[in-house]
Amino acid sequence: MNFKRKYFKYKLKYLELKNKNQSGGAKNNTHSKSMFMFTDANSVYSKYDKKYNKHDKGYVILGPPGIGKTTFVRNQSGKKKDWIDQDDLFRDLGVKHHFNMKNEKDFQLNYLRADYMSEQTRSLGYRIIGALFWEFKADAIVLLPLELHKKYLSKRKDLNLKIVMDIRNYLSEHAKKNKIPVFNNIIDAKNYLEKL
Image (cartoon, rainbow, N blue to C red; front, side, top):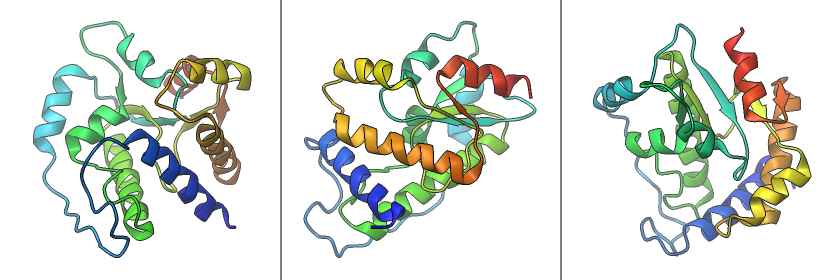
């Protein structure tokens, strides 16, 4: 099985578990096709301008679920923050990565849209941290030491250990393939990027 197909399989399982009680999309129709459109995001970015700093250079950090990305973003000090939680931003931008996730083509399109929005956000000078991507070349990837990551995951009943480990392995391969620097914690990744 090629790596993309394997990633699709594991990501699909993860999303099914995460969204098992949510409605939306064509749950049982694997033949339906999503119809996406791109809209003007100025109002969303204007809202984020009030809460987050824009920089001369934007960055994207990727990491698997359960490494503390949301906690990191929430714990930033200052009136305006530097790093945006990708989940929050993409929700506001209408990126529904779980929409019709049982259809392989729609699944791919959902995540390619995430890649597009990550690149757009980075090019606008924002710094984001998240887990959503298809082939996006992030500026850094964070993979916590395995035992620490498992400890964090043991406190997250919404996450499946095997699936997160598969996503972690995929990110490791993605980093090697694209020569993306890998860090064992978010702070070191952030500090590295901010010194570039």
